[in-house]
Image (tube, rainbow, N blue to C red; front, side, top):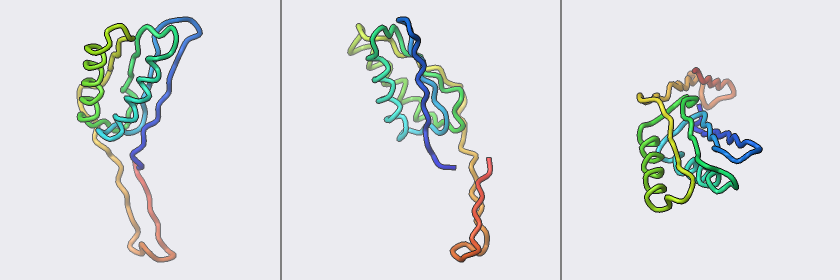
Length: 117
């Protein structure tokens, strides 16, 4: 499984919260990209708060969640006039369960790779 993060931003036609839903894999490295997306959502006109939903992640490192929560705390301390960031995450990490099986003939024309979930 490729460690990739997919993000869906839900915005209503009326002023209110912006909901950011993350799927895929959240690590400390991908948290940086998610923070950038969250900050864009917070700048939308009429945004009162940003809800970050991490419950659809397949793989969640606690270091990634910690980076998001640290950013939310700093964001609120530095810019209390901006929309509040709220992180909703499972309490337990979700380890990556991808197993890559490579056929014994790897590297030949008979190579077979399978990713299981």
